[in-house]
Image (cartoon, rainbow, N blue to C red; front, side):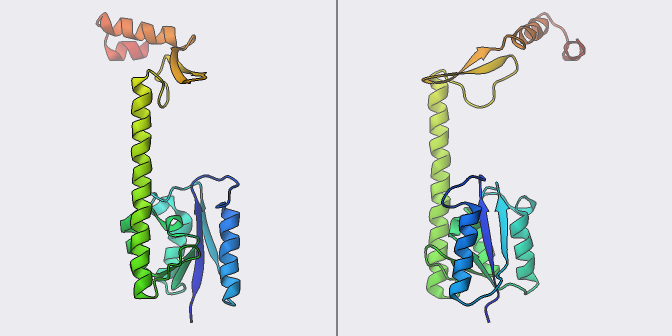
Length: 195
């Protein structure tokens, strides 16, 4: 007899179609259609699918139930809720059956295991591709003279219609200038820090 438990994860806690509440409802409907009462559902909110270990306490707790034999199947909305890293997804699927409500993955069959591997590969590709797009975008903004990331000490960010730009902060800018002048004059880092 199947001993399933659900898992829901979202990177940012906001009300969208894949919110934690929507995922939980989807998992509960899956269980109800199979006459499974009180299927436990573990959650991680505000946690990336790239995080591993202690950074995902809901998943860690669920996997401990798998290891103890209390759970033999993890049910998720989709493969990327479990992990976007192929290695992590593969390691989990070797320990326990995985069923996705969307995408039709069911690793209790050979075809399901193959589909799980393919979908995990595509999820990792999309995530890597998104990272590449982010790097290209940041490089473009830097070349255009626009701000990227947190401003260094002495600067602040000025939001304009065409993007964000660095400008000298009226309060910390003069201090940064004095630090630089002292360093150029030969003052030691320790004496500057003491000052």
